[in-house]
Image (cartoon, rainbow, N blue to C red):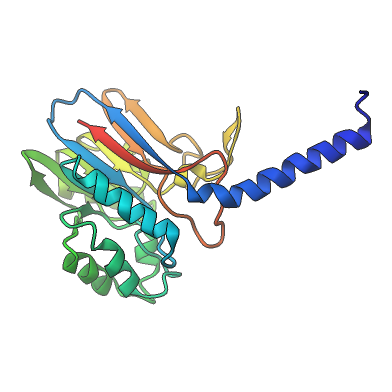
Amino acid sequence: MKMTRRRFLLISSGCLASAAIYSFIEPNFIEVREVNLSLDLGIKVLHVSDFHLHGWGSREEEIVELINRLQFKTDVTLITGDIYDKYTPNLDLVKDFLSSFKGAISVLGNHEHWASGKYPLNKGLKVLEDEGVKTLLNEKIVVKGVEIGGIDWYEDETSMGMENLSRVGEVDVLLSHTPDVIELNPRAKITLAGHTHGGQVCIPFIGPLWTPSRYGVKYASGLFNQGGRYLYVNRGLGESPLLPVRFNCKREVTILNL
């Protein structure tokens, strides 16, 4: 059958409409990724990021059930920020959600800081502490003989980022909300980050259209080797309510064998 201009436009419009509808469906799916690295740390970590809690429903129940199941297979759960934001209805929701994350280690992201007008940081940190989540504010902790450090959000100010890193010092695993920290040469065998959401919308054969990074989409998601220093960027488990869609960029939970 000859492809007329009208037929082409109809098919194209149909494909675009289908893609738009699917982008609101894909946030229901979670990919569990497992990454093996020969770092000789002898530890298995569960890496999660960017929950952006806005309510309680089937998605949140699925995340909690999944985390509960995977925590039995790993040594420690590491959270790289943006647990809540200014659109989170109340901190009781955060408290209930984190009740499954006992013993987790976290850093803060930009959204916890940006929400401080609604939820002062000391109150947010108290909720995390009450639920057994240790928040690293430019400090480090030892878990099973492995040094895990965490830097606070630094608003893309290089001097502040360098100061935060100097306070943490040399560690085995570094937690940072933003992957951009890898360009500041952190003294860590591997840095875990989030923040980008993987771009949320990734065009086949092209990739993500945009990420909130000064390096564009360079560190959108996945594993990177920077001269023997590793970076892993998690796509996150939530989205901003201003853009509650995903396309070719599923929510992610990561198990890293280090």
